[in-house]
Length: 394
Image (tube, rainbow, N blue to C red):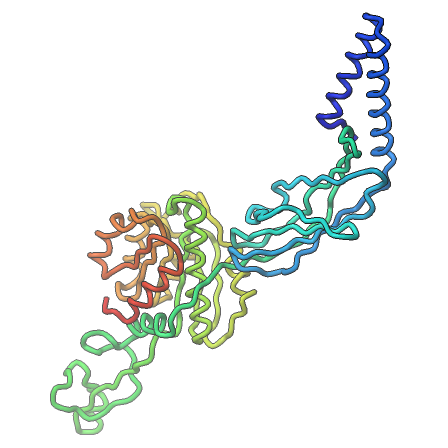
């Protein structure tokens, strides 16, 4: 138990009035001092003898999209006679949860608190601290809160057109180069005038006695690598990072809907998550996949002779991937150069979600490596640009 600011003021007034009453022999000041002292005593007794109170919190949802609203219901036991409740809304709500309105009191010791989820991840929400005060606001006691509620905030993915992702996957498929030659084919057929002689299958031609050419598989690559840049230096602020996460989640969601295998990889962290081709992905699964991916201020990873902006897991994953999308803010040149060396030009797209100045920073790299999608705002605008770019030659 402690005194409030008002209580401290009353205590000072009591002492000064009592001293003045004695020094000046003024009975009126003595009455004032006695009344103030009695008020403090009553307030202290009411607060000190109040029954033990318990506070609990319940959320109306357990999974929510970033940017959406939710309601926390706070319940308390009896406060005690002639006491009132005050609430302290602090950081206990979680780093990604903001209070969007005042506490509203209901019957039976229930309050409702409107909240808004601002960052993706898993958060433990503690009820606001309950402080009981007397009716005069002179004394107070703080109730210790131990219960917590967990909530999963998933990224705010936006819809992509059905052809947006499949167009990119077809563009990087084997056997779809300018000459049509590749490493895979499903059968052979007779040579026809105009066929590329590089497609002649010499062993079968020798056995059959006629010239046969390879007929290539024309199916798209069935796996996508979403490479999420997690370096602090690549983003203007944390909000731009959240927008980049939103777009990455949009790619993962779109791939899952179309039966495309997808791997989610962070540039530096030892984190990789995968969804096999044909498996369905629930919204809860998307939230769990992105929850461990956070901004990191890590030094470059050391390689023999130099430092790399890509971690070990990212380098090994890109070595197996043919269709890669880097989602970033303002990527450093060393990251772009590392990707250029690891991924074929037609198998790489870069999505920049950051301020407009990003356009000039990546223009030179884009001109020499086939193109880059740059957005000055959020995931929705980036999705529209991606759709417009679907199937465009690289």
